[in-house]
Length: 220
Image (cartoon, helix red, strand yellow):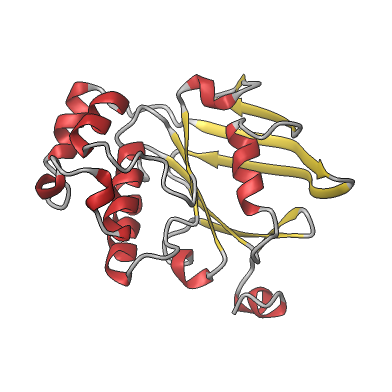
């Protein structure tokens, strides 16, 4: 059996200016399926803005985005990239079964339903779930979608350690067929699951060589 071809997401020249202040400047980022790229940065450094710009929903951002070597002016329209914001994006009154039926192919929905933590919640409304259950469902929904690349904006924020571990395990399990870009401002949340760790500082991405870099920038 032939191994599936590696997918690539390549972002270059990404810049964004708001009210005369350059928040992002000439950013280059490449993510392949199998990669888990972590982006650290203090609150307000522009991490969420960066993910929205890559996804294509941030008006006014200059960028050049290639997915599998094809240019996309609005990457989200390709269906090959998905974005999970910090705030929940699923309506509180919708049942999990209905949401999966809308977002996923039938086979993917059936497989997701069999997840040991999702199965007991399948007929519940989203608003009845705990914070950890909500975030796990949202992340899992994107993992079962056809998207090759997932942009996760601080997926561990505000949830209990048990679900932080569960989501981390799901990312590691799915990394063979997906590429992940994950932001956080606490290095402990993502250091152990990333294949590459970067830091967003002064509008640019910088590789993190080790704990000394984190201490220098107040992230430890």
